[in-house]
Length: 317
Image 1 (cartoon, rainbow, N blue to C red):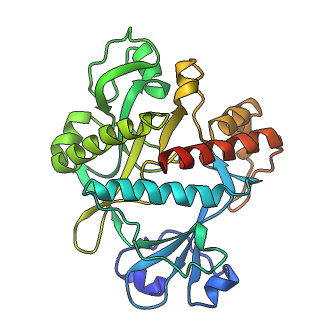
Image 2: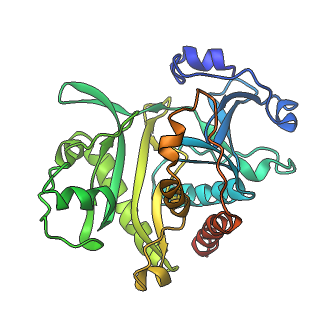
């Protein structure tokens, strides 16, 4: 299906920029046409008339929404495999995802980085007089921005958390901290979103609890996770392409967690390096389409790939 037809169906926003660049030759020759270049993955239209796209994960990297002139060899393959595992876990729990069971020709060199996706629209609803899209976040531990908010006496989600809770406090049951999805993610009242989508929130809460136990039994602590919800052509809600992955969740190896070494097995080490090197400030001068030139030690790149590999190996058991 051509991008013009996809746009007419309302499955791709007219305001979102597309590309006329040619994609990977072995895909283009089979009728898959590149139409969008993301920070870390690309999208191709598919031959035929079905409303689906091909997602191809790259080895590119970004942090703080800043595209970097940085490749980590093997990252795209590992991320694709982890994403497929997360989607399979959700499907076994009876939850639909946009990732199709159909695959591209597995003899293609690019196949390990490819996922065929059902075209869907982001879930939207009106809250407090404004139509918003959502990120549904569940947390097992108090850390990050929520810990900072509690310390400052703020209650962004209406959860009435005590201000004296220590960092890395483990909640007896996961807490639900939804936000808007947009240029800036804004906290939403937890109870209001739960009342708006009771079946979705209850289903995802159970999925998160079940996955937390599954992962811990395999040596991984799940700190939190973010679910993005879409609506397919049948009007059914589905999860997106990042389901229980290190791109949407914080995973820490159990051995590190038990030693109070709270370094997540994803790009956290790269984010920390970027903070120290003031990447946010440096990126302010970037023009549209430009990448920030960075010099990242090989040791950091190796640790990031090792984290993805460890997650894949442990969660595949």
